[in-house]
Length: 78
Image (cartoon, rainbow, N blue to C red; front, side, top):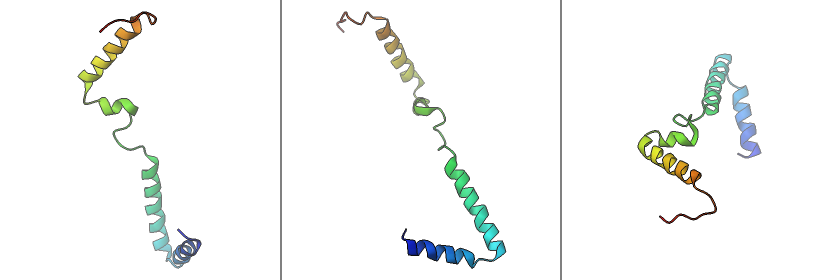
């Protein structure tokens, strides 16, 4: 947005009636609140993407635990 466009918007805001200003404020506050919320479905972090694949996730964890218990210097043929 250019400086002139910003000034134009400010001048348009100054020309609003008090009721229009209140309505604009409510709408802006609503937009700000919506932008501050994390997107839905991502509350569990990266594991949230796997919530529908519980069996696959269990297999991955089981395999990782198996690998973790192996001696790290001795290769195991698979």
